[in-house]
Image 1 (spheres, rainbow, N blue to C red):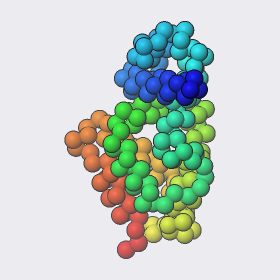
Image 2 (cartoon, rainbow, N blue to C red):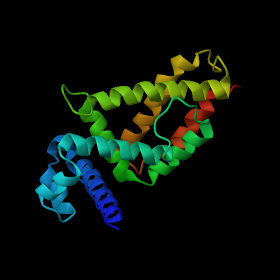
Image 3 (cartoon, rainbow, N blue to C red):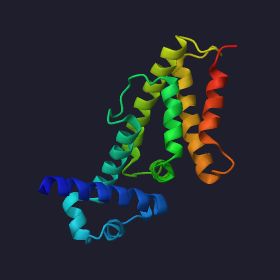
Image 4 (cartoon, rainbow, N blue to C red):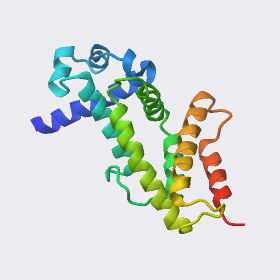
Length: 188
């Protein structure tokens, strides 16, 4: 019973951290603001996450668990239609997309605690996208690129659409635009 309550409280803290980071960015978020949002003292929060960096890593891991259905990041190939479904799913959870985007943007600065996470994550994501493209198109895409050449471009489309959608959701149909992009990849 106590373990279940502890896990429930941990999940509450992660949800609150997602909200606070989405609103203020990582650097603007404080442990005190997260603790206040869940009705804890900062000391109480430290019982679950001993540092701000530990909370950040847990938030990033949780986000990736949601996106992969608990499978975690791997270099296993995703089917292209499942990527389109993931984009549709992301359109239903703007807070999580906003948090991820804020952290990603901040992580390119020197000594940001999420820099290593995103560097490793993107290496795995590019490998996974290359595998997905290879599974769908073979060793050459219709335009002649190899899956390894096209993988960073696919990742750029996914992330770029998220930023555009967050800035102007009324003008950018993220799932529709991604489906349009997939149409560009089809052979004539």
